Length: 305
Image 1 (cartoon, helix red, strand yellow):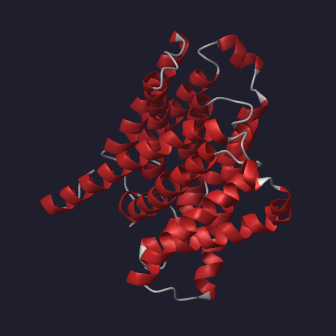
Image 2 (cartoon, rainbow, N blue to C red):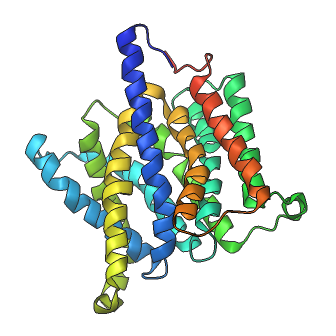
């Protein structure tokens, strides 16, 4: 992972620590999302999440950076936020039909998708070790999705939620390459804010007509608590950590941290008393974690010069 000096090495260690924190936060979103997915329409739920996140981050950006409007910034952030809007809508919709573990595992396909996009959009080199690791990550994801049942894999017994979430993952794969491609040197927290603003606008255009028909008074407090948690920890903080880290370690290595999600979701399920998964799931979890470490510590990994 190293830089050219001890200082560079220490700075990269800090970046990887930030991404570990980000992985921990994001992994909780699948479980929290599952618990509140039925409480609101998926698009409305995503809109509320983005709106709250925008309100939370806005005062900080205004105080330390100023809310300077720029059509150039709006255009760039609109392109990026479009990928997130599609992903989160698919996520909340899919969680009505599938499990948090399945979605967290399908998400491990995103590094492979992002790596392909990054190769085309920003010229990131996919070395042999990275290609092997990405392939192993996909294999591990498949093992978990089908509970280690090869027969189910051959029969392609995906449930409706899995297919919906997979479509969202193809949109999410564009996120990190687009951040690297469209970043113009502004503070990452500023870019994060305008991504949230434009994302909220996209969602309002898509779901604004539904808002008057929502029975807001009947929305349970636990739904508001869950949405607020997702807005602060798995939207504002995780977006910032991800975008902050991309210029240092690249889109593919950032997205490779999603390989930790299945293991973290399993641990969370155990802590919440949901029991251990089937034995057939565990080999897939170990494979995707191994793939993450291969990508992160491969000496051949390099960003375009």
